[in-house]
Amino acid sequence: MYKKFVAISLAGLVFFIACKKSDNPTPKPNTTDSTTVVPDSVAILGNWRPIHDATSYFTLSGQKTSSDSIILQPDDYYNFKNGKMYYFDHDFGYSNYDTVPYVVSNHYLITYGNTGVADSLHLKISHDTASLTQIWLNDSDPLAPTNEYDTLIMVKTK
Image 1 (cartoon, rainbow, N blue to C red):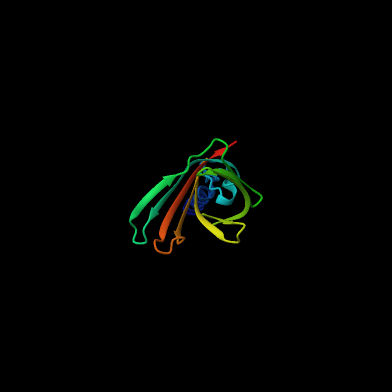
Image 2: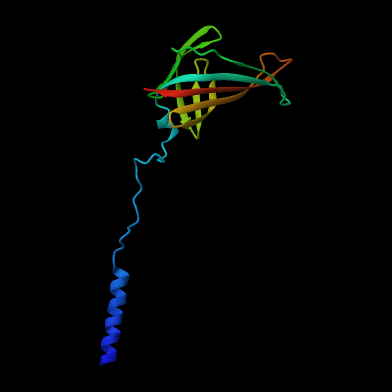
């Protein structure tokens, strides 16, 4: 009888310990944590001020031939909302402003210009800084085509 009592008590103790709640439950993810991943299509929304705009030129074999930078002005801006990119910049003395539709897909910003041609730019956003990079073949001079590597860096404004 004593052995039976010890066996039942021991089985009950094992069952009780196995069913006891942990003092350290599994933490739930913090949605306000700074490591929360925000999709690029949401992070790009808002007003941006360009701080660097440069182009490097390469031969088709990869040799760098030249580079230039656009002198940015305080009133240059890019604004992304409702699937449209509104922008104004001074590009080598010319004032450019336009509204073009865009989509964001797999870290690429795709814009559709008035000519019906789509531009694809690699998009990288980190906190309040965004960079857009485009590599394209410039064949306006058929005797000397070049590869152009354009980079635009912007900071988010309030």
